[in-house]
Amino acid sequence: MNPEQFHRALADHGIDLSPVQMQQFASYYQMLVKTNEHVNLTRITEENEVYLKHFYDSLTGALAEPRLQSASLTLCDIGAGAGFPSLPLKIAFPQLKVTIVDSLNKRIAFLEELVAKLGLQDVSLVHDRAETFSAKKSSHREQYDVVTARAVARLSVLSELCLPAAKVGGEFIAYKASAAPTELQQGGAAIKKLGGEVSKKVALTLPVIDEERNIIVIDKVKPTPGKYPRRPGLPNKKPIQ
Image (cartoon, rainbow, N blue to C red; front, side, top):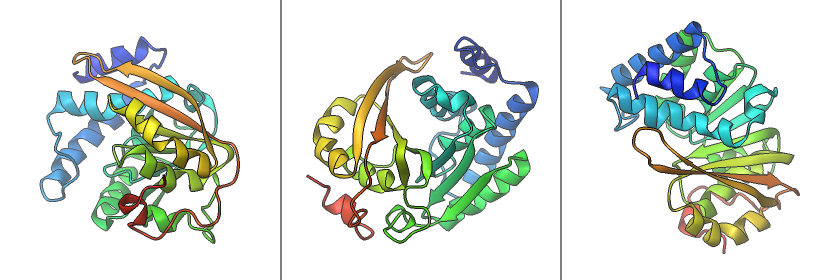
């Protein structure tokens, strides 16, 4: 998917990016590849693949949850890595107020430089572990309209890392591939214990390569019990059953 195909594919879904936004994506790509030479940000570096598997893929969340396209929402991206999915969402939908959390300082440094270069407003960058970011006494706990995560961990683990940051009445949007049905089945107990309820699962295919994607939208229907998230590392070692 080259930049022109990217623009056209989004336009087919009613998302019409301006020349300024297209230039922001081009600058994003250039800086990603340049920084990736000395900081491990992504194994995907070929332009067509970045536009498809990072930029377009990040925006599929807004196809599944159209409110992202127009509502002034607070969005928290847990384990964003090189900024996916939150920064492509921010570029396409500037009204979003974005907070990015990542545990590696080198990635945060890259994102700080990137956000400045692209001239993005209302983007906060936090160097922290997900488990401590939304712990019981954290000011970030249950503060966000939308929490996103993409390719971070299986759903039973992700739910514990992400749902505590979502406000009651908000939602957690998990980006998943073909294993989504299995992960949903295995993660159902964790989602319920953490105050979540699955509202929809939207199946999509990436253009050009026809790879399956699943966007799982989980409503935050009640407060997360104070004992979650557990201490760093434990959610991954012992997922909630």
